[in-house]
Image (tube, rainbow, N blue to C red; front, side, top):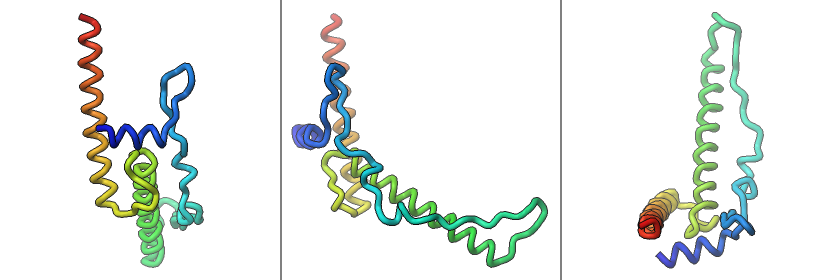
Length: 122
C-alpha cells in the first residue's frame, strides 16, 4: 500500500485549497514521434461507386495504422496515470499487470475511506 502512495505522491501535486491532486505531466507531453506523423487518409467515393482492390487495401492499411496508434496512445496514458510505471517500461504485459495492481489498490483505499465515513457519521 505504501509503495503506491509514495509513487503517487511523487508524480502528483495537490492543488491548493481543493485537496485535489493533479498530475505533474500530461499525456500530451509524452507524444511519440509516431503520434506526430500525418495519418494516411482513407479513400472515399460517391454513393454507389465501388472501391478498387488497391483502394480497399489502402483503406485497410490506414484503419490498421489508426488502430495501432490508438493502442499505443492508451498504453502511454496508462504509463502517465499508474504511479509505479515509467516511460521506459514498454512491455504491454507489465503495463497491464501494474495497472490491475493499481486499480486493486485504489479499490481497497476507497473501501477504507467509505468505512471511515460511515464511522464518522455514526
